[in-house]
Length: 134
Image 1: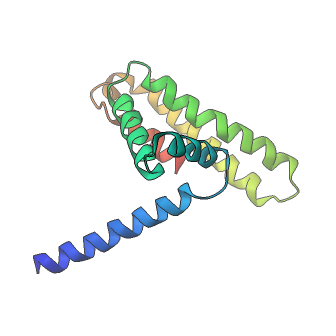
Image 2 (image 1 turned 90 degrees about the vertical axis):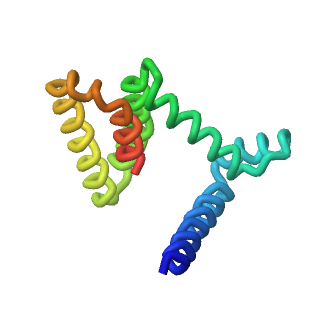
C-alpha cells in the first residue's frame, strides 16, 4: 500500500518537474537570461530557478520589506497586462484583469484592518505572492 502511494507521488512530482522544465525552455526574456546563466555556470536552469525560488521564498518569510516586495510583484506586471487588455479588442482579457484588480483591492483593504494579526503569520506574504502570481 505505502509503495503504491509512494510510486504515485513520485510520478506526480516527476510530472511537475517536467512541466516546469518545459516552461523554463520556452522562448522569452526570462528564459533567455536563464540560458545565459546556465551557459556561464554550467548549472542546469532548473536548479538555478529552484535555488532562486528558494532564496526568494526565504526572503518572503523572513525579509524586512516582504510586504512591499509582494505588493510590487502584485502591481507591476498586472498593470502592464491591464493596459494591454484595454488596448485590445477582446473583452475577455478586460474581464480577467478587472477581476484581478478587485481581488488585489480586497486583499489590500483586509490587510489594513488585520495588520497586527498578519504579523503573527510570517508565511503570509509568501502565500499572498504565490496566490497573486497564480
